[in-house]
Each structure stands twice: as structure tokens, then as C-alpha cells.
Amino acid sequence: MIRSDWIDLAASENKRQEVSADFCVIGAGAAGIYLANQLVLQGRNVVLLEAGPPKCVDSSAIGFDTLFEMNLYPGVTEGRFFGMGGSTSRWGGALVPHSIHDLRDDAILNDVWHNIVRTVDDYALNVLQQLGYPQGRDFENIAVQFLGNAANELRDSDINVQSGLYLPFRIKNFVTLLDNVSRALAPRVFYNAVAKSWSVQGSEDCDNSRVASVLAISRNHKELFVRADKFVVAAGAIESARILLEINESGDQRVFRSSAAIGCYLADHLSVSIADVASSSLNMAATLFAPRFAGAWLRGFRFLENRAPNASPRAFAHFIFENSSAGFELAKELMGAMQGRRIPAINATSVIAGMGDLIRLAYYRFAHSKFYITPGTHAHLQLDMEQGAIRDNRVSLTKQKDVYGRNVACIHWKVTEEDMMNIEETARRFLSKWSNVSGDLPHLEPKVIGTDGTKPYDAYHPVGTCRMGEGVEAVVDLDLKVWGVQNLWVASTGVLPSAGTANPTFTLLCLTHKLAVHLGSAHK
Image (tube, rainbow, N blue to C red; front, side):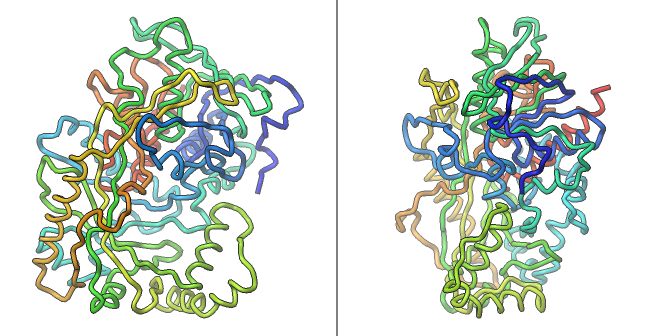
């Protein structure tokens, strides 16, 4: 549904228009919508710019070209979408906090991780309340409640179990947050509005640069000139880095301090199957670890190493049930259509073929509060491990122009031999602990990494390109303000120094809530 108070820049009657606001937020993904919503609830005047249309499309559909210097990075080609709701409206929904498992005693960026974990602790409840989850922060204790003795046995083997929280499909697209705000308070939303040109005053030498305005443009070259007191870049990790690089080239001299590693340290979770569930244990695995329902919210399970070696990458594991019944595919299409606010692609044949399993899914959902797994469904244990932070994995700008006249981004990214060795070592260490469990848990059959021909990078959790910190390479400080600029912040997964032990969405929302509190209190 397209709200009547959203403005399609491409359909504007005027070739050029101007607006002013207290805040201009660039990007209407999960973080941008959440931040705009929080600011307008504080009575602030907000303009929200989105490069894509009301319904999300991939980057090529809106003319966002990307070049690749080395390996193709699928986080760009398959993992990101533009439009109201952003990539979260397609892939998101898993809310899991970064926690003490992300802290390392001798890590160079341990102060950053302490800040991240502290922010999650401080604002997790606020975020859950804003999203309508009624039971508070229960990621750890509800897992023990669900699993009972199995959780205790895992803990005795030095494995911690968490219960991730998955957004209901009806609110998985964060646009619903805007639906709940009265139109008198709602931000002014412009879509098909690509941030292109920036006006910056001051210089890096005295650390007093200010963004004065941004010019947004549509594909048919309609223009929107936005003046604001404060600007927040809330695009994804790739696009946020591209925007900052563009700002840095907007004048005769650099805007940001020269040591800032803008666009560098691009990293992701590397995801690989490390063990199959033995055929004799398939039903046991489904009984224990099939996702559970808490009202409309789905709960899944993930496993983390307690007392992981300080030098080891952060990682987590989870079961994947390869449920491919006709009923499951039908339900997935129906829910995906609800999430994307589109008409489901179904026909009478698919409905008839899937009706039996669809009824079972509904029965287990309401009678047992469990997700129905077809008996004998194959399952495996998936390891998601953070990629090593390498400065040379980066986003940069080329001289080539896209349809908007912007410099096309180039990605230099690879998985190193050290990454692959870390996957093998982490898998070996994790499975050795699981095999020491003496209770009645599923039997796992370890796999030789890489023998199934799959590549270990389909998580699509890009981080690192606008990393936070106090060091000379940091792009933003611990409050997400860009170093060297008085009125510019970044709210994207790019601020995380590495992928850590969790999907980044929930932590980003906690950082964004903290930012909203800070910006709201400072803007007086």
C-alpha cells in the first residue's frame, strides 16, 4: 500500500523543489524508519529519503551499478534491496542480541565491543517494546524454558543456547511503524529520491565541518533540495560507505579526517554446513529444535561456545531443517507476499498440492505452538563465523558514472585462506564439545568443509565499512557521529567492526534507539 502522504519525487510536477527540516534521514530501511519514527514521536520535523520505490526491488532495478575488482560479493548482488522497508523487508526478521560472547580479553577493538554490548543491554527492552513484543528480553532464559534438560546438557559441554526472536510477518516490513504514526506527526517521506550532491561547510583541520544540504534526484532528473540541522545516513553498509566517500569528494578538500578508513574492512558472516543430523536422530532434532511460537512471534535456537579462545573469530551455530514440502512452500510464498506487501504468486495447483501440509502447519501452530517439520526432514548444523577484518576488503569509488551521475562503487572482497582455516578450526572445536554431551541429543555426523561445492558466504550481513571507535581509522565515534563533522551520523551495520555472534539487525536497532535519544535530547 502506498500512503497518500508519501511523495514520489519522480512524479513531481516541479523540476526542482526545496524543503527544510530538523533532521534528514537518508535511507528508509529498518534503521532509517525506526530512527525517523522515534524522532517524530519526540516532535521533531523529519525528512526521510528513500532511493527506491514503495515496494522493494534489487539494486539493478533502480540503476545502482556496482563493479567488482576481485571476487563477486553476493551481499551486493543478492543480499540488498532498495525501497520502503529496505533489505530487512526481504531477508530480515531475526532479532538476536550481541552479548558477552562477543567480548575478547585481548581484542584491539574490545572497547568498541563493550560499547556495543552495553548499548544492547541498555536499549533492548525499548526496542522490543517499540516492536510490540510483550515478554521483554528473554533470549537466554526462554531457551532453557523450552529445552529444559537439553539446555543443561549443552551448558555442561560448554555450549550456550539462545532463542532468537523472529518478527511476525505482518510487521516484518518496518513500514508498519510509519503506519502507526498519525499523519500530523509522520515524517515527510520522499521515495525514488537518490542522495547525490552534498554541500559541506568548514574543513577537517579544525574539526568544524557541517553538512548544509543534500540534493536528491530521481531517475528522470527531478530534484529535491533538502536543508536540515542534522543528517543521518541510514543506508546499508555498502551504500553508507559509498555516500560518505561521495561526501568526502564533494569539495576542494577532504571533509573527513584523512586517517578514517571509510569503506575499508568490508566483512560478513561466512556460513557453512558443518554436520548432518544422523537419519536416526532427525525426528529427535525436529522435536527438540523446531522453531516455537510465542504468540505471533517465532522463536528459533542457536548455539554459542562458552569460553571461546580469545584469538578465535566470533561464531554461532543453528540447525537448518530442509523443509521443502508443497505446504511449506505455499506458506512461505503467502507470508513473503505479506512481508513485501505484494500479491502472492500462487495458483490453484499449488494450493491443492500444499493444502494438506498447510493444515498441519496451522494445527501445530495453534495446538502445539511449534513449527511443523515433516517427519524425516533432512537437517544439518550450520556454522556462521565472522570474516576476518582485512583493510583491503573495501568499497571505493570509480570514475564511471551511473544513471544518476554518481560515481559507481567498486567492491574489492575475498575470503582468505585464513578464513577457511578458521572455519575448519571453529567447526572442529564446536563439534568436539557437542560430541561430549552425554544426554539424549541428536547425533551429528561431521562434514568435510567445502566438499558439497557450496560457497561460505550467503549470510548477507555486511559490516565494517563505517566502523565505530576512538582510533585513528574509526569513521564514527561511539555515538555514531562521523569524526570531523558536527552534524552527520551513520546508522547502518557498517559501524560494526565485525559480524560478531549475531545477525546485526537487533544490535543496529539498539544503536539507533540510543542515537534517537541522543539526537532528540541534543536538538533543543
